[in-house]
Length: 159
Figure 1 (cartoon, helix red, strand yellow):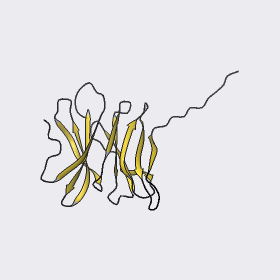
Figure 2 (cartoon, rainbow, N blue to C red):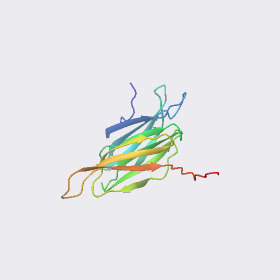
Figure 3 (cartoon, rainbow, N blue to C red):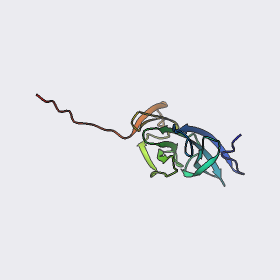
Figure 4 (cartoon, helix red, strand yellow):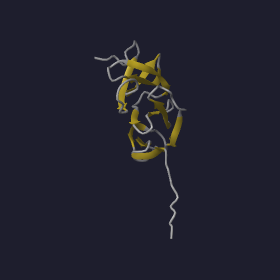
């Protein structure tokens, strides 16, 4: 049994992702919500292949709803996403297998309230983020957004 998020605060909505490595730190990344004195924060915790805890910390302010993460072997990093504290945008950040976190940014501008994100990684370090979103007076819909490296090469035809 590995205690990942256990404190006197509430920890909820966990998600886990992995990056295939031969051994060592950063092989698994757990993200979850933590209620610290009435304020929700998105948290991260790395877990080694032996079940030990490594780097961890706060990702950013959140609204106490679900988080998502996916790992990419080609870039040796994770992408995590969570609804902002105001609940009006979906925040995202990369986290390397050594614990370095990229800048937090909203990858998308949603219509109103993004919830329940999910992420899948592609072959070359790109990701597909999906979430449900609704705008007052409209039905709930599913949106998808591509994030990451895109490589476009010119085509030369030799005659």
